[in-house]
Image (cartoon, rainbow, N blue to C red; front, side, top):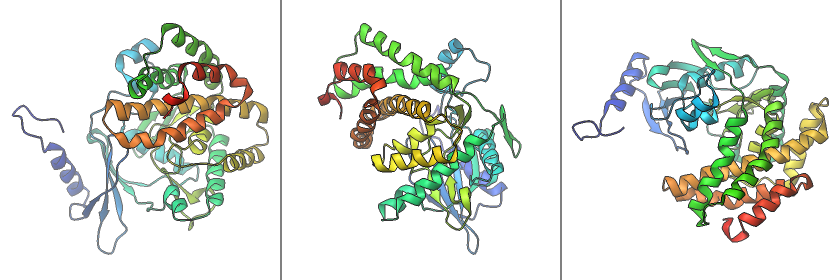
Length: 370
């Protein structure tokens, strides 16, 4: 919390959390903090003798506002980054409504035990600690994990999400990952990579060429925005639940920023995973499995869009990590950058993306890719 007017660090947030737990009969639960990520959310595990553990979500109201459904591009720019990128600003009602819709599709989003969206607090079902990333690190065969993750995406892509997601008294507009949202993520690479890498700011003509190259790709992405997109679909947000059946074996986390997007986007998140190496062979097997399940999909068009949007997504992720290091003083994110550059270069090997590869070769030389 920010300091109060008296200069002391406010304890209001902790008091609010204790009151919430008291109202919901959980004040006596043992609270154990869990590791955080790049977001402003905090999680704790609630333990009670003889009962299943729960997860306590705390989302303080510290972010800029999310995107109003009817806001124009200019209004979104004035509102700030979350509105431009169509991020949920961590809103608990977005999480609750999205979780309910996912469960209605037979998928394993956490059940919501209690929530008060206005306070930014919720208690969730505890899906356990078997994150894909940790299991694979410990030697578990990744093949069935990735195959199940692909089957979840196929299930999601066969469904038609409504304009508004609703569950347990929460409602959240289900917006499209549109041109402005896509451009926001890509263009901030231009701002933040020089700050991180020590390059001189990109010249005006280089920025104009960047826009000319990416504009038709963004147009394809918006035109193809037809499916539920988790938006952060990777091995740190997927939990293996082998006691469940079919697509329910994949526990889903961190989906509150979901949007209507191109089917290729979540594949880039899964297979261009900045925190772990996904081999070209695993990538090929995952794409083949998806195209086998969804035989109605135009394979050539899907693969072309996957490479193009994968390149855009990789540039977006590089901006996020550069900002974490150069803007927020979090050097641990630098370790993920070389891998993300390799994914970007893998995408740019597509001959159709040769002009974008040439832009990077000209303006971001190898020594500035770190």
